[in-house]
Length: 306
Length: 246
Image (cartoon, rainbow over all chains, first blue to last red; front, side):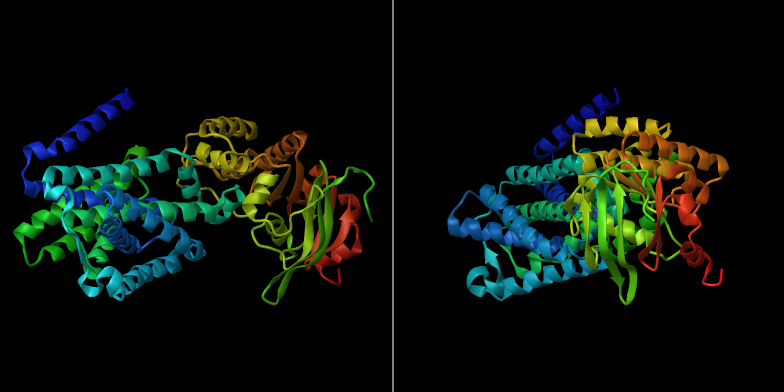
């Protein structure tokens, strides 16, 4: 009964989202698109966090995916959708190679290195003007779907749903047990037969590939990539705030966080054009004081305690 | 010095094992063997190297030098997860529950990764193992368990990996008389399943009742070996525990 209700809810929300372009204007659609991109990033960040590893590298792989998608599209003349997937693959392969080295580190050391990585990617891209257009970036000859807002929204929705499905696969399989064990006690995890390094590298690659796909989609939707725009720290910090706000280590926490904070950000931008980030920051601080485990985490804890 | 009671082949052979932590030799040429199907007591004063011995055997850190053979095969530098899958199980002196998982899920982790198989199979093994060690109400969270239950859960977690040999590191510490009694029975039941046991314990009654043979470590070396009755009368052992003048 409970699972049936849940499926009805999923079907309803999916139908609502898919048909959204038919009863909203382009403004709301573009807000929803932005929220869905951040939702995918927040989820992918949380998926690695479930192993206890805190990454600041989101913006780096988001940017790599964007640049790779644009370069593959303009140079190889592939279908834009395929170039987005290829952008994700490039980000994933980068993460696989880099992860083999940096996932020897843990905790704060890993976090600092990933923060540096995003910056290193940006500097390299900036300094390869022949390939990447240098500081000016690259402009696509045409936006994807000729700028049609309905198809564009569906593309972003597909990216978000991909992240959602990946997250749920992680939560419902042995990956969940491996990551939770590694987070709770790595020595015990190793002694239980878990190949900790292998799991961390694979999860780092998968989540980076999702960030790359999101970056590729974002680049095609906006029609350009640039070092400052595509590697902006916003793409790391906002998704992290969303996941913390909604609740870590779950699928629904980052989803809820992205939706609530995404709507709040847009609303504040309209109401307080010059001070919205300040208010936004205060909201996040208050929420984390009131809901230390995020909204989903704190509520499920209260329910369990009853 | 050698015991003549157990004649089985060795399951684990440890040769000249050294482990340095900076300038400190936690293991300094330790040599011993554990025989198939015995219960071996590992004794020694605090800091003698008992836990380090288990950690090196289980691959938590590699030895500085020396050799370890498991069922005749060299396993000296294998990582912990491979050793677990080969059949070396252990518990930890300080209980390490996975606090975000339920009791059943904690035990499932051992079955899933130490043993392979699907989630469903792991779930079944976890339920059986919890019943075997005497743990009920397996959906409980870790915060709802007593100290004894957490110790039992640790043992269940290790058992779920299907070990051939199980190291128990001070599982009786902090238990009252009745609980100790119960735990001794549990160790007997595990041994009856054909699992070889290496047990580190400070409660001598436990060692006397359970073990076929003991080894005594001091300063990272084996200073005595044999049945508990003989070893406990060895002047070398007495002086290791009580000091030179005793």
